[in-house]
Amino acid sequence: MVTEAQSKYLVAVIGAGPAGLYAARQLASQGVHVVLMNRDIKPGGLAEYGIYLSKHKMKEGLRKQFRKILESPQIEYYGNLVVGQKADFSLKELGAMGFQAELVTVGAQGTKWLGLPGEDLVGVYHAKDIVYHYNKLPPFSQKKFAVGERVALIGIGNVMIDIARWLIREVKVSEVIAVARRGPAEIKFTKKEMESVARNLDLEDLDQELVRVSAVMEGVGQDVKAAKDFIYSALPKAEEPISETRFNLKFLASPSRIVGGERGEVRGLEVDDTTLVPKNGDTKAERLGTKRVLPVDSVIFCIGDRVDEEFGLPVRWNEFVKNPEPRFPIDGASYEAYDLETEKPVEGVFVAGWSREASSGLVGVARKDGELGAQAVQQYLETLSPGENIPHDLDEFRSRISQLGKRVVTKEEWQRLEAIERAEAERLGLEEYKFGSNAEMMMAIEKPSPQPAD
Ligand SMILES: Cc1cc2nc3c(=O)[nH]c(=O)nc-3n(C[C@H](O)[C@H](O)[C@H](O)COP(=O)(O)OP(=O)(O)OC[C@H]3O[C@@H](n4cnc5c(N)ncnc54)[C@H](O)[C@@H]3O)c2cc1C
Ligand SMILES: NC(=O)c1ccc[n+]([C@@H]2O[C@H](COP(=O)([O-])OP(=O)(O)OC[C@H]3O[C@@H](n4cnc5c(N)ncnc54)[C@H](OP(=O)(O)O)[C@@H]3O)[C@@H](O)[C@H]2O)c1
Image (cartoon, rainbow, N blue to C red; front, top):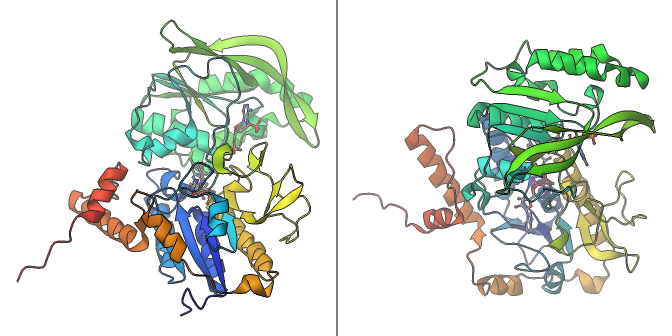
């Protein structure tokens, strides 16, 4: 085993979702000492707090891999530790404490607003907050979401299906309406995911909708039957319905306003009718100027996320800016953070996973991206001059942690928490058990272990 003092390099990986965890493993395998810092007490990111709540097998499979990664003595873990401009540590501070490189894998924690009138009404939410809520991530686990009976979901990808699934199979609302700015040929959800809710589809309404949009589809050379077959293909293996919820899909409708009532509540979603225009081998939605209002009492945006603007790295569009001419390209891609003002890379700072490409791809994609980001970091480390290559220790980092005035969770404490939650799940006969607040998690960690009887 290579100890911290013997390691040639010391790297901070910020964010312990799939990208950060697999990056940490890759770096450790090359003799790097890795300090993994994570906002949440538990590692896993969206694999723990995003993937749908009933996908126990998939989640447990991933947890097993994460546990194995974190067994490495070359990877230190600090949960409940936030990095950012106004957080526990800034990137600059970490650099000054002896980390030779920082790999940012904090996901896409910002919110993508469309700037529509009415976005601030009660009953308007973003999918990420809701998935964090039902997956019990504090503080979202403790928040109330005033979801009504008729819910519009904006966007038509797999996240929309997850939210629809929760509304249809857990909350059991009266109606869910998924609103797509483009048409049935531009659906982003997969057949497999649709199978969880397909039996709630209002097929009569769907058929009428497909007839309504067929002329526009044919106008851009799309196959209406193929699009219809795709949606219907989810029916044969669909899950049994357990609610009366009507599930409707509305196409060629771009949201323009959320209509509010006197008490600040949602009364409807106003949409612009759109048509499809060919663009670079794809299509784009163009507003026609005619509007209609869908009578709903809640609106949930399922349109993807953006990175956290407050983190301390330059942001453009929805992502941290990458060096357009990477010094350490991997498969032609850039993993280097870039400062648009100075037009220089941010020295020693790299990005990977959803921090590099927001809301893009499955866990496997984030894993690969983390590993490739780690390779870019390794290339950078090898360029450091001998003076910068001296072994660094973590004394200052550890002493600063103890001065933060908050409880930072170590690897051993997280392992203890996991064991306690597993035991609780077993006791209650549940697939899994999660404490719903940080305070409860901390209390469990601090509780003395029962002593064996003499
Ligand atoms: C609702 C939903 C459902 C999904 N379902 C599936 C599925 O079924 N199957 C599948 O393969 N993929 C699924 N995905 C995709 C998958 O979750 C992502 O591809 C993957 O989690 C992205 O990994 P990441 O590490 O880049 O980011 P994340 O998973 O978001 O991890 C980011 C980590 O960074 C930490 N962090 C954030 N900010 C800070 C900070 N300032 N300081 C320190 N740490 C910080 C967080 O605590 C978190 O642990 C789903 C995604 C969503 C949104
Ligand atoms: N079970 C699973 O496997 C699972 C579950 C959840 C998420 N994921 C993965 O996580 C990633 C993110 O998923 P996602 O559903 O958030 O993203 P997505 O697949 O990109 O879908 C986003 C949807 O939002 C729409 N949209 C985006 N911007 C919009 C705007 N300004 N106005 C109106 N509509 C807009 C998009 O329409 P346009 O096409 O017109 O842009 C699209 O329909 C995907 O890779 C997904 O597969 C997987």
